[in-house]
Length: 194
Image (cartoon, rainbow, N blue to C red; front, side, top):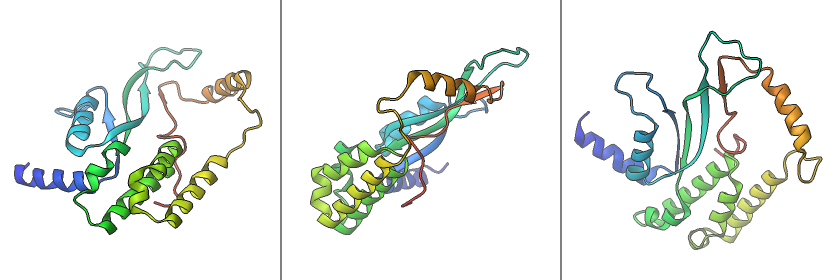
């Protein structure tokens, strides 16, 4: 790769990217591929993002017919990276006001889409959001966050360990024996506002 091109791409990404969902490997599958540790170091150091979640995929060795679905070896997955609240001010200093507002709003939308509602609310309550957004923007985002929080069916106030074990056992009985994975990144992946 041409190093000049690499520098331009890196600078452009660092300036414009609010978050990143990327496939990562924990075990070598291809010749010369970067593993999770390489990707994680690059994204943290060169793009200024922080790791928020990992959806993991496990593989099992064939030839054994286990009665219970064992986890297997973590092989690959998807990693979710976002900007930290502490780095927002430094990140947006080189942008004009309109671009700053767009970037902060984009980060909020991504956070809400992944169900990271505590993070979204922390952004809305931050001084950087108050400085660059209107009162109306704040109300819209708080409404969207609260609407997302209230979704779901929760018949038991504090959950039920007994029912959780039963439903988990039933769900696991339908999983293929050769692979196992987390369901998604974040709490719930939603498609609104993207």
